[in-house]
Length: 308
Image 1 (cartoon, one colour):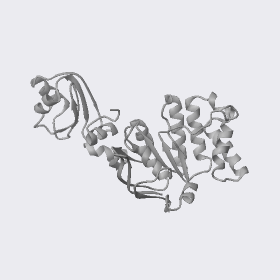
Image 2 (cartoon, one colour):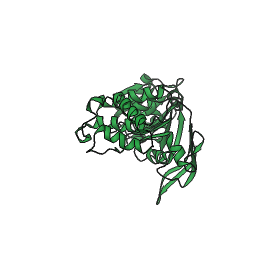
Image 3 (cartoon, helix red, strand yellow):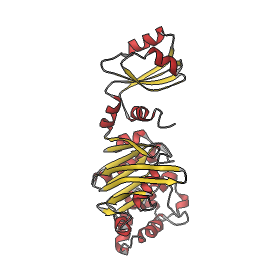
Image 4 (cartoon, one colour):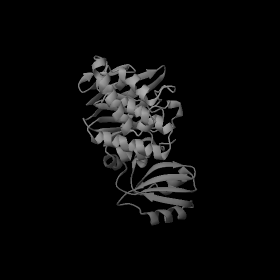
C-alpha cells in the first residue's frame, strides 16, 4: 500500500533522511520508532506530499505521490504532530472546514463528522470552541479531522505527544480499532511501549536511517534470546569490559556507574556474573533483569537509550 524507495532529504548541511526504503502492506499498522530528530516527521511529510524529497520515490496504492498528488491525497489521511486546529471554532466547525478541502458532498461530510465526533468521544462537546478543550480532547479532534474522509491510508505523527496517560490510552485504543477495521496506518513514536503494544511491524530509525525492521519478536532476536541485565554501581565502562572480556555475553551499553548486558544462553549466568564483578573489584549496588525488548534492541543498534 505504501512504497518508499531511496528517500533523501537535506536541510542545508543537515541530512534529515538518508536513503530510506520500506514498504507497508495493506491493512498493516507499521511503526516508526526513534528519538526526536531521527527523521520520522520529515519522512512522513514526504509521504503525505507536504515536503518534496531531494531524491527517491513515494507511492501509495501504486499512485506516485509527487506525480499524481491530488489522486494520492484522496486516499491519504494525515494527523500531524502540531495541532491543526482553529481555537475559536467549534469541533464541528473545524471538521467541516478541513473536510471541505477534500470536496466531499455536504451531506456525506456531515455524516462523517458526526460519526467521528462520536468515535473520538467529543459528540457532547462538539459545539464548544476548541479553546476550551483539554490537550487530550484536541488530540482526539485532530485525529477525527484526519479520518473524516475515510482514508485508506492514515499517517499519524506522534499522535499522543504532550497528553496524560488516560488520554493516551483512549487514542491508542481508537487507533488499534481503526487498524483492525482494515485501514493501513503508518505511526511514528518515540515511546517504546506504544510501538510494542500497537504495531504489526516496526522500523527503528536514527539519524535519518532505518537500522532494523521487523515485528517485536523479530527485532528482539537482534540481541539474542538471553536475559538483559542492567547494572549500577561503582565502576567504569573500561573496568567492566576488562573483567568481562572473555565471557559469552554482549555489552549493549556501558558508561560511568551503569551498564546493560545481554547474557547468552550458553554463557555466564547472573549469579556468576555478580561474583566475577565482585572478584574484579567492581561494586554493584543495583541489578535488574528482563527479557529482550525494544529498548535493548535500540541499545544494541545505537549504543544509547531511546530517551537520550
